[in-house]
Amino acid sequence: MIEIQHHFQLKEHNTFGISAFAKAYIPAVTLQQLKEAVSYYQEEDLFILGGGSNMLLINDVERPVLHVLLKGIEILDNNQGKVRLKVMAGENWHDLVMYCIQNNFAGIENLALIPGNAGTSPIQNIGAYGVELKDTFHSCEVIEVATGKEETLTKADCNFGYRDSIFKNVAAGKYIITSITLELTDLNKTSDYKLKTNYGAIQEEMDQLPGENSISKVAQAVVNIRTNKLPDPKVIGNSGSFFKNPIISRTSYNDLIRMHPQMPCYEVDAESVKVPAGWLIDKSGFKGKRYGDAGVHDRQALVLVNHGKATGKEILEVAKKIQEAVQLRFGISIETEVNLIEN
Image: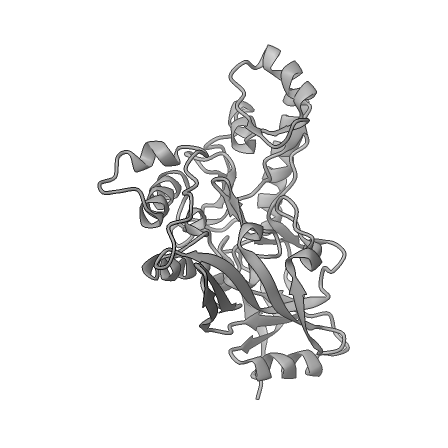
């Protein structure tokens, strides 16, 4: 049976720590509760809440908020060095990474310390340090909101792109993800796996750590880097990277480095490169800037922060200032990675 709480404060359920109220709040710890909630609110537009980590609440949520809290990890099969792992949507993502490392399952170690839950990971195809969710994603189980029907979507169905998927565009609001299935490498049964250490400062950080190179060492390097650069949402409200790293043509990049020779980039393909948004924002003068209680982190310009009592609107205003300044200085448009929730 579902429990409904009205005029519910969401401050503790979003990592920005924004004070905003939900019209109604329904926690779903079982699949049956989730289905009942979908059926009960058949005529209303549900807001689906996961870990609360990739969103900015601009206003109160004038919709019922369904909080997906399903738990459980199950090994579906393990053959020829490949293990297929089913993870329920409410499992914490970093805890999942640690579970995989403890069991010697390789593939998501570069994604350590990314905030949020497993069920929201496909929505933006989470990624970090040269690895994306799609690299190990096999499928996900969903409930179609309009019908309550259960379906399985394959990797191809999800149409993953850079911080993108069908869940952010053509299927936005259509499905509730109840579980994901990953296909990982079981290092207990094979050594046919190559660590991914050539992105950012991973190798440099690993060189400072004792012991042989391993997935555990990669994860620890990532944790160290992220801890040094990114603020803990429990200490200061934030949602990690606020902007996507823009992808531009090599021609545009070659023009830009004549004026900005220190501009870094990462190769995407023969025609395009990815430029770190944090570098663009830093060079535009925003690192550490504060506007009331809304501001930019002093160690990572890609992260917007709530120093205490900032509203979602105030943080959004800072984001717009940054976008305008980067466009003016570099001619590059940077898009938000965080989902902006306006009602």
